Length: 135
Image 1 (cartoon, helix red, strand yellow):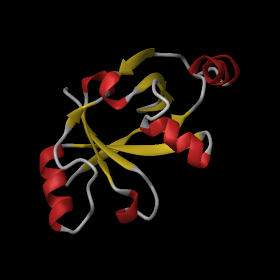
Image 2 (tube, rainbow, N blue to C red; image 1 turned 60 degrees about the vertical axis):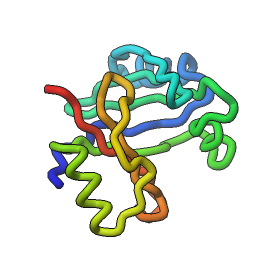
Image 3 (cartoon, rainbow, N blue to C red; image 1 turned 120 degrees about the vertical axis):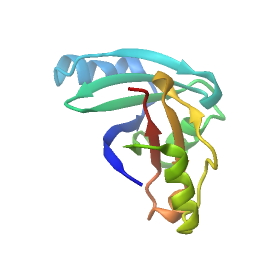
Image 4 (tube, rainbow, N blue to C red; image 1 turned 45 degrees about the horizontal axis):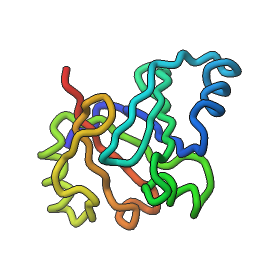
């Protein structure tokens, strides 16, 4: 498996518009856009920082994973995403190494990226997302 870079850091928030002001107006990080990913019950907002991004995540459903995360842990960093060269190969390699996967097969996430999550029980409590982007 080849990790290319930290793709983004996902931050769970209750109100994207409120938090957006911090990143855009206070920190001066340009707002790149918003997208709702119905399958994941989330609306995302992106703020590019160098070769990576901050991704704000607001749940669109009280039973969605981001809402449950906030209920349990409060607002804050929810996951770290690593961009990999070949997601299918990475998942197979990790599976062979005994890493517990949330997603056995890639799915489509925000921005059309192929994504898959690793289970925090196998990653010392950190929710790790792997993603592969079209060039």
